[in-house]
Length: 469
Image (cartoon, rainbow, N blue to C red):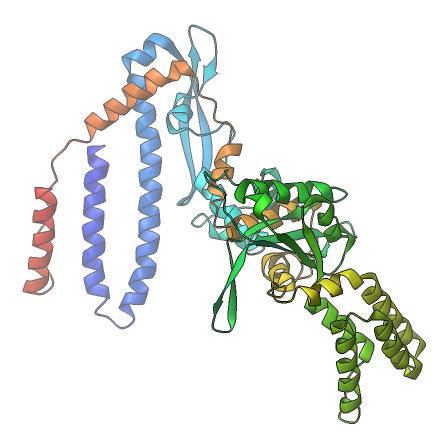
């Protein structure tokens, strides 16, 4: 132990002196930082490997270990750390009392059985994989080491993603709660699509210039094929745990009018269905048709009349205006599209009515923006093919990050590190032995033979400080 720590000290001083030499040359700082990164990674690799081997030797030589555990054989093992893949040897032991076999070194460092990636590497891997493709994620988390796309995909699949929050100690009192809902459409590897759902719950907004911030935001979502009731039950449970539900006047459910969104009306008390303005505007624009210089005035007049009919909640008038537009449509395909959009509007009369009736309490609906940012940016904006389980987990993991929760806790909870009570004594003795072995004096470093007087003085002060500490 003493030798490697002396080597570490000399390595640091060597790097610092190398910095002074190289930083004075053309492009020296850029080159040096690149060189420094490689050297520090190598140093981390060496120290990690040494620590594993040193701890193994300490455990092997412990009197307490010899009394309880019989050494059987030495096995090779590889494990991926942030410094790269490290190969090392550790012994297999037999507990003399109960005939259980155990790798005491794995127990000492709490390395799970058959674990190939350390916990922090797996956490980083998953965090990268929900932002970029599997190949890039596999290249970026362990120095000079490529983790396969299949491994990345497997790690995503294995994870149990929990979006639940701890119950707050006190409940909030608010007048209104807002649930904005939408879905993405993601292509699967074997054909077809899957639709990860998204619900964002909030209770108020803050205006920041042109931008609007949703306050006390909470995200729910994932793939809920034929299980939409489960999603709305999660939303209800959260609202009930977080707010004085009996004091809430209205819960507004905003979306595009899809049936799965309207299911929320059956779950949430005093809930009101609202068709969001984005989809309403999209439908109206589709019916009125494309504007040109020649017809711009006519088209704008149609739009004004349609919106006035909405404001008056007069859907009979809405139909009449749209029939005028349809009468002018000569192309059959275009006419059928417009008839479908008319039916869409008529199917959502309640949502449109509530949009205008409650407009003072509403803030608009940003569901499309949330889906684009949280889902589409990773899942559907590129021509990718997904497995359903990974669509579910990636969408949920992106919501975990959006709620500022830690992924590392989920990674930690899924790892199976079995603790043997009999090993605890050995761990204690080994720790004490290792602690006692690192008490040594700082070695002397040869006097520098280059640099200015001020530079040599600076390094001398550093060394004197190190010795004093």
